[in-house]
Image (tube, rainbow, N blue to C red; front, side):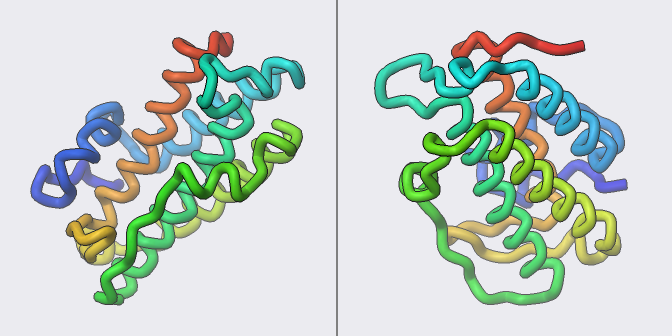
Length: 175
């Protein structure tokens, strides 16, 4: 069981994601919410996958690519800190990653499968961490963050963007 991080384990910016995560078994939530996201995406047509709710905004497919990229980075940070690597890690600009990845040119099914593979790796990583490793922290983008906070950020980040897909993009809910 991964305990909810204290507010001292992350900068206030990440509250926007962590606060979206309900209490309970975080690893089970990561599995069930991701399964629901995949089911939701499977219902979309190619035209819906290319939809942007406004000019200059990402398409649905690009949002899913963004989720995969960010989860990779957050999980990498967690790995480094859990392994007692105290090397400060740089930040990243997600607004550069998404166009460089050319997610908009790919099929949603392919990007969704990539995201599923990333999530499988994330789950394997966090399942293998000890309680001590989960409490370790390090510096990313000049700020301190704990391993367990990164796990919650991953869950909340997906919840945040799925909420946007439903409210702004009109992606239908499942179940």
